[in-house]
Image (cartoon, rainbow, N blue to C red; front, side, top):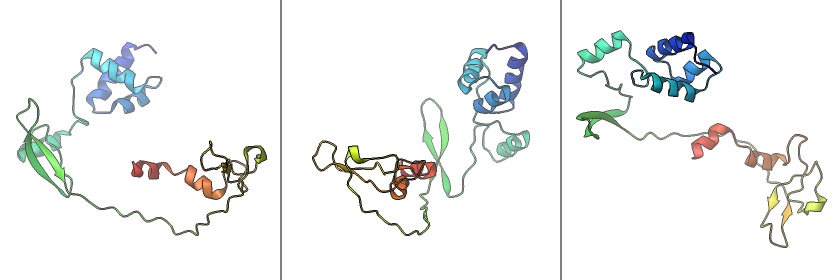
Length: 171
């Protein structure tokens, strides 16, 4: 991808408007987020916060005593001043802990009785969920009926394929 004069001007305009590198890359098309970041760096465009504040918001923060770098408080947080690096006193926020309750739908969970099949007994339609240590003599596979599009039975598919949101929550 070549950086034409028009694309560079569009990059500068979008950067000044406060769009993220990902958003700029999407609008320009045919360029990655990292390419946008690299070009911004080479052009020595002014660094900015995550998003630029609107003039009305800047006036409001100036009137309340917050500088251009003041952050908006979230509910349940309080400002804490701390000396951070080479900056004078920088406002940081210490958030109160909030407990989240995740409700899962109640379903009848039926753990299948394994058929304990050996590797040579497996077919395209049997569950290939491993049972035990592969190096031991009593190692086997579940062997229950598997769906046409899955190597596992319904129960083991739920274990193997968790929704992405649930995986992120467990980290």
